[in-house]
Image 1 (tube, helix red, strand yellow):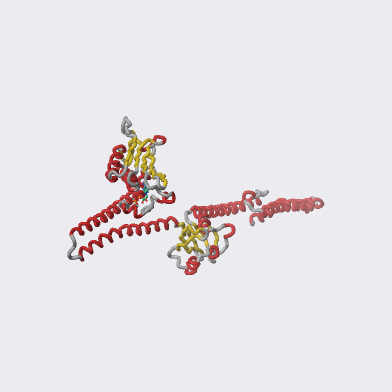
Image 2: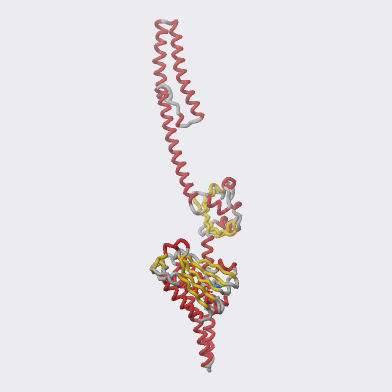
Length: 440
Ligand code: ADP
């Protein structure tokens, strides 16, 4: 501004003083007129630039900054331009940083809510909306305690002890379990972080059920064995014939526990992600023949067992696991089919060069409501029948895992009183031709 005043003074001196000189010395008649015109010119120059500045100030943006006319005003506008530009750049950087933070918070898989000092919602991400049933537009500025009306949450908010997260059901969806954690930050603000722990809780409940089931399965045989042993210890004149019978029953129960432990170990190996599938060339026709022989010995002539197969189809997979899965399905067919029933084992070509394994029986069949749950661990349609025939309730769970490790899945078709078919289709990528001829 000092420069501007200095320049103005110089301008006045340059324009007005010669006029004044002419006015006073040479031509006093015209001189005053000239002097006034010069002064007016200087004034008009400043008024024009001021006008430009005034107009610009109504909407001050660095892009529309006027250039100014005359060296002095040009300098003023240039200085203003520099200030505006650097302010704009700083504001832009801040906005970008803020946007980045909001985008990061929005992309978080957890729900995030920023609360002000009175626990009112300042900002929240999409997941928080979904978890807590919020609507951004209408809920900003609302107290979180009003929106999340849950006695445990109100207490959590009041106690100010936020060390541990709080587990509650989602207010608008009772199927969803949430973990809520408050994290104080800055002077007075808080972050509310919500996490969907429904799956975690399901796994935890499955773990609890599993331990309860295993304990239950073990308790019965242990009670039987323990009971007989107690009788043997307490009875002085124990009848050797009776003791032989009791020892046989104890052996049965011990074998049952052994089968259970073996199946449990197999399942845990199959479920272990660190245990990759060891692939080999599996001669499926040979494996089928072996399984059918085993089934015949289990059936002891009570059933008719048929084998239909394409002798040229082999498989890339794990022999031990495939034997366990196919064996389980065949032995189930024997165990759940009454005498005189027919069991048909098939190993044939499927669609698009795939291969199909199936076991059909003319047994008791399964009611439709049970079918979706059959591969759950320890799920049985008839617990007594399963136990009588030496079942552990884990067979189909093992089958499901083995098939999934071979990119296949179990298909079950059954009609109550007529029989069932358990089938699995193996993809073309796993099928290999092992022999030239095709023999059934
Ligand atoms: P289990 O050891 O009890 O046989 P599985 O997991 O092999 O356990 O089978 C689960 C249940 O499925 C069985 O208890 C039985 O009720 C039913 N099931 C399996 N296979 C057959 C079949 N071929 N016919 C009728 N029911 C079957």
